[in-house]
Image 1 (cartoon, rainbow, N blue to C red):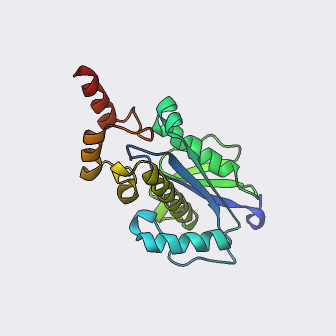
Image 2: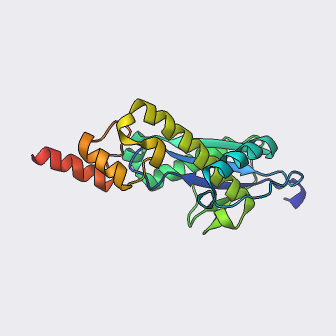
Image 3: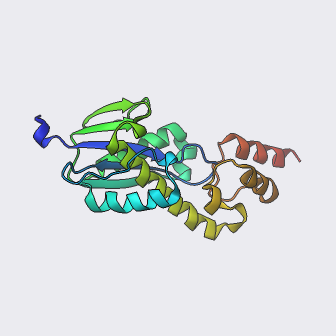
Length: 196
């Protein structure tokens, strides 16, 4: 396939490490005619920078799609496979479809197109940076919605990551339905509750 009609999508996930909430992934095909300055790994950007860039990506990319895998799916197939599932859903949701996928990390989800894993790709390839930004901003918004339903945990501040504030709330209130019960701190708490 010639470069002229090759559509390369970048793919990245957000939310593998948290103790709660779904894992998100995004796939983005950038438009060479509309470069977006400032794209880089979402973790190296402020929340305001991510939000601004997310608006530009949605407005100027040739295609983008964000997908997720639920807490139930994470518990059923584990976080690695759930991340791969979310990435697969993101790529398959692109219109027009991509012809090549560049995946952040060291492994690729099962896809009907060629794919290549790139370690630290979210800082090396602009299309992966764009996917990183969309996955992160969409997941943060979802964790904000979850925080409204379960205000005791502070999800809007830490997005479910195992920071001291979250661990203390977990110890005080126990897990809510959005907690991943197969993650060690949650699992340990549930086991200690059963022993008492």
